[in-house]
Image 1: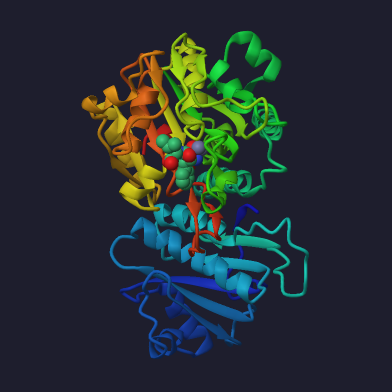
Image 2 (image 1 turned 90 degrees about the horizontal axis):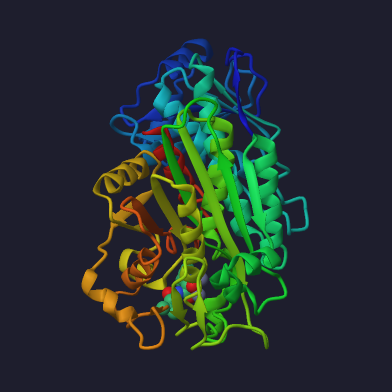
Length: 484
Ligand code: BES
Ligand code: ZN
Ligand code: ZN
């Protein structure tokens, strides 16, 4: 549900929940106004309940005189100059409170806020409002959904437009991630991508299994060949209206379910592997957002190799040797290191379109989660400038990246006597050898690999996300394109 701008004045607005964001300086012209008209000092009451304007805090009040709305909610904005994480959290807090009390129309008063804060507050509100309940039977305890979310204020219309586009992208990514593997097969992912392309005027090429075999995408077909749900390669292209000054390519790992293959994962490690397409979700979410934002001067390729890593008499085996799309041969040493195989073919393919920069996103290694924890993505790149742009775009998106090394000495761990390389190295430095494997397929000096195995997924509920897909990566890609 998009957030709309409302021109109504707040005492008259017939909303279920009126929200006032308040920073930790506890100054608010809106609350001063309410104090004057209602004769009640809401802030004083809130303080008595230990409300300090901290992000994540809230204070709910009913039946204020002079207001049409039955309830008023204060949400803490935190201190300083609208710290991004705090502002996102404030928006999410408003939406979560509304869901809890079944307030179906939510109205946020933004008179005291700058445009930057309004944008992030809107994104936070949309993310906090997110529910994935399509497989749960409805009961009287399930929130029936929002009828409207509006922001009151005098900000420019484009602020909410942008926020809505980014939030749409993140939500699409979450929906894709959270959809179950029996439903979201590679073919269905391709259909969803085609829908995005038609909705926003992107070019769309999809190679089905026959085409993949014919064209020599042998690493993608090797990963997918054990499954009844055949693989696809998805390629959407955004072309700007005017001159193209720069070409970018985003590539996302789209393993719709990772059993591990013959190197079968133990039961507990297999749970969650429907989300092994978190990179694909981020890339398609970004396509959805960018298709609406329509940035100038930049052509963007969105590429998703998608396959199900399954077992059958046809599945790839350890020690199979496969010649990839780029002509290099790979000896399979572990069928569970499948993401790098499908990415290798996609990376080789997209270079034919001469992008200036390629960024791939993948839930690639458990080792990266061990190294950085579940909130931080690993950033591997051969381009110093790209490293700082990604770190900056991450910082303006509330997404955390940490630069990791492409340690040259570890590359020999991929050596084998029988092929150009094998697909796993020794145990130590698993996230790095995975990145070095990908680097073998990149003949460019501006490439980044983002290992998002940790942050793509929230194991437990957070204020900004229910358990499941987080949509991690979408905001960073979009902000990278926007140059902020
Ligand atoms: N999809 C997994 C990586 C992963 C692990 C994602 C945990 C999210 C959470 C990947 O395909 C995989 O299985 N990697 C192996 C690599 C190993 C065989 C070298 C791993 O990380 O154990
Ligand atoms: Zn795997
Ligand atoms: Zn995987």
